[in-house]
Length: 270
Image 1 (cartoon, rainbow, N blue to C red):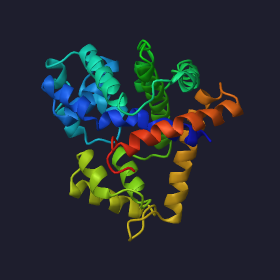
Image 2: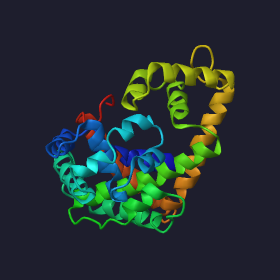
Image 3: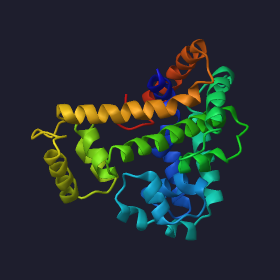
């Protein structure tokens, strides 16, 4: 149920990473697509160095981060990046979300505010938790899901660390489920083919990936354990809701997430 709650509203936040509205605004201050992504998501942390972004974003090649952070802060302040992200989210979501969001906002905000009581061990989430809530209903929903996403995301990194999985290994294991093309994850995270192939070989040596580059039984057990750990660490945010409210959350959120996906706002998903 925890994963269903998260996924039902995931697209309402996730679209910001593909939004032409966001890309245009970031380009306007001199940032390319990767630079805009790193700076906009890291802006809540302040003008941090590359090492902090490498640590909190986890699965990107450190070289692509170092090529853009902290140089981005010479072009734009973190405060301005946050403003640009809000503006882009509002413009993009206005195309697909209804005006009446009162009920889902109430449920999502309760879960998000519950999560802010559990800052420990979640640095990227904690940085976003300090931000003021926006007044616009669309942005309130966006912010609620941003908090829930980063709360879950920091927990996911803890699960990966617990199982001794690096960032690139996590990507290879994701691809090895057969659900996602390797080239997309490899290129967007800026890993070379040589680095990718070496990681596949290492995971094969550990018995996690087979010769067909799909998960072995041991690999499936490991990845399921990571996902289960992630769900357990995300669950406390939603515990503030009753079982009936959780069901209502999904009923209200799923059509909103579907509207975002069907509008083509997240590439590769329909």
